[in-house]
Amino acid sequence: MKATNGYALGIDLGGTKIYAVITDPDHKVIARSKRSTTPESTPEETVSDMFETAQDALLEAGLTLKDISFIGAAVPSPVDPETGECLHATNLGWKNISLKESLKEKFGCPVVLGNDANLGLLGEHYCGAAKGFRSSVGFFIGTGLGGGIIIDGKLHSGKKGVAGELGHMVIKVGGKRCGCGNRGCLEAYCSKIAFVKALRKAIFRRGESTMLPEDKFNEKSRNIKSKYLARAYENEDPAVRKVVDKGLRMLGAAAASVCAIVAPECIVIGGGFAEAMGKELLPPFEASFRTHLFGLSPDEVEIRLSELGDDAVAVGATLLARGIES
Image (cartoon, rainbow, N blue to C red; front, side, top):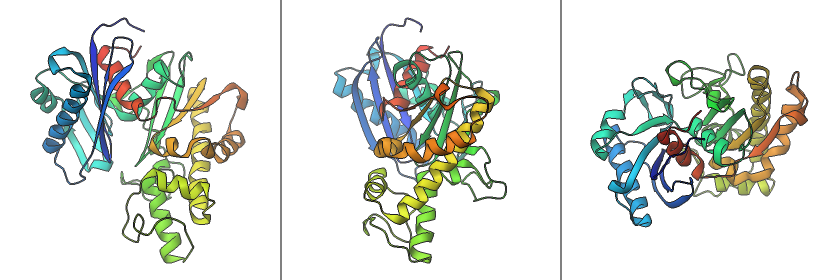
């Protein structure tokens, strides 16, 4: 890990919230801030919201932008390392949007951009659950499903930053329609958007019962807070258990397939949904993972839940800004 001095600001732009952290030279989080995102916001409005969220974190830390040496931002999209373009932010409705110049103008200095799930894994690899391993793969379950790959300590982003988009691996030809437009993507089975879509069908079309609160989930719901799904799952809600377990089995099979390509030492499962579920999500995932794994013993691949939680992506953004990715 490179030695870098100074404070760093990391911003995580997600499908439902903006989250910012300030880290010290030892990569410890000294301040945090969060605010909800508006799905209808334009890219320009979103940049302003990112700036205000950053200002809240700076205020909590007792700092100003002049005290910050590095700024990184994570977006739910592949990011072209050459141009800074967000190629396809499905859950924000953006396509071919470049935020690099807008952020530079707003913050008055360069802002390094990266894909949110890639940076979540970067944070976990150097400061969290995958620390000490040479190679790791991350799956981050939230509004969508993001992924990341680190090989020999280096973040693998590939051509135009598209590598690691594990949520868009096709796991069922002709399967469910994904928000990206393709069919059969992993995200179409294992993400909050996928869970809600399947639950609407189960509950309102097939009449299955549920413990989900009526004021939080109805026929028009497109998303739901992770805590309500986790609570229903823990209380053995049959509809929620059926949908979530299917998604986690699909995730386990996909993780085994990735092992046939990357053969990582560690797999990290994170994101808001995973944090809310905790160890409850491991049995269906691990059972499917063991069944589909090729060439490796399950004991040779460490399965770990995220240690950094909500901080993971934003901390990863600070590491990227500091040049810590190899």
